[in-house]
Length: 162
Image (cartoon, rainbow, N blue to C red; front, side, top):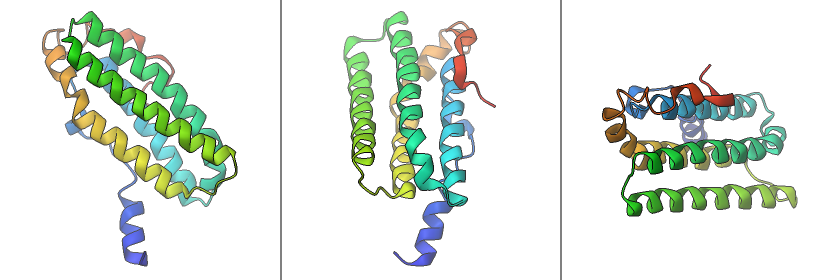
């Protein structure tokens, strides 16, 4: 890869919260901001030359975050009586992500040399696509839940936006 392309790829890895990510469901948006904070932490570690070391901890953190966040989303979908097929599609995507991160973690734990910026690119791309497509359902739910505030805004947990 030529240097200009590598710089452009790394530059797009830092994520600024943008209202295009907002679903209007406060708890979901707060957790998404927390995820962006985690991803930007990995980005910073890579920039400081500590990407390989950061991979050791990031997989566990991403798995814990996914468990916490996906549980929140799935509970909200059930609570709001979203059609079962939409709930199932959401769960299928969540399961696929968990498997992919678990696979990356296992490969890393077995000694495979993963390239930190490629891991970050995959994770960032997956989450941003998920937030901007699949999680759009929460916009509709938020409209019926008084701007999302009624849907558990006090349940932000350990991944509150900073």
